[in-house]
Length: 186
Image 1 (cartoon, one colour):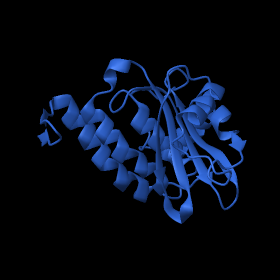
Image 2 (cartoon, one colour):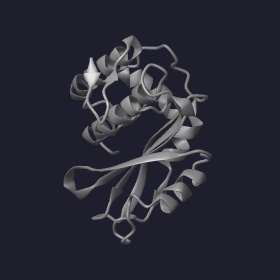
Image 3 (cartoon, one colour):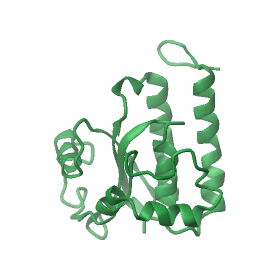
């Protein structure tokens, strides 16, 4: 498979696996809409070795109407006790296990005033880097996107291996983060 950009990029077998995993997520999200902590299941799927290989990831939702920036889900590879497990086989139990992650607890306890309501650009690197440092991240990357109801999503993340970031994965991640917006925030 080729992805057309300014230059063509050929997808290898591993990349096909990534695309296949990503394409299955919308069905899983729809099937499990009532599962508490659905966003942490999706973030877990995105963060694990089989897709984006995050060291840590933080999903925040900015709601200017209610003037809050709230932590929705956190993923830490070192906190994860579900390596190699199919979290979708028993999503309620998997979500309950993820609730016990110290990093996820830290993220879910996060609550500040809305960046958008304060007139701060959600794409402001200095502001986002400050949030990432508050979460203990040392080499953060971030993506921000618009969500339904005037909300905005913010994903802060670190890769296990910075060499993981390539053009193809970045394009896949830019599209994939929108899936978090289909999950209930709380």
